[in-house]
Length: 123
Image (cartoon, rainbow, N blue to C red; front, side, top):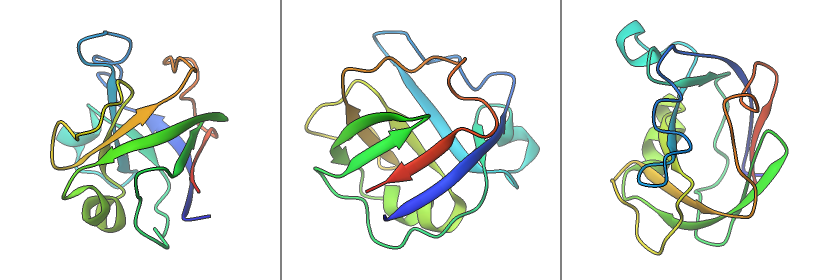
């Protein structure tokens, strides 16, 4: 396992882009995020990223598996240092932003799945 954390909460606008076919992403951050950023984020316990996230890895969020299809140039550094990245459920061969991890899979993540205690794991 490369990474394992638990969701601790979310900001009031954390799900603003989730489920929209044009966006469909969430932003995650350690639960010590500055308040202005925390408003937009799914917050989680700080955890060690043991090994860089790579294309082909399995990313499991709230027990739903996804395949990593692209990793932005800054995503590993920000995930390692701040627990921060954008999880984009549209997938695709290129990251849309430097801090983005693109995910592909059959599951549909909703706000109801991303509750305190749900896990974030990378294999």
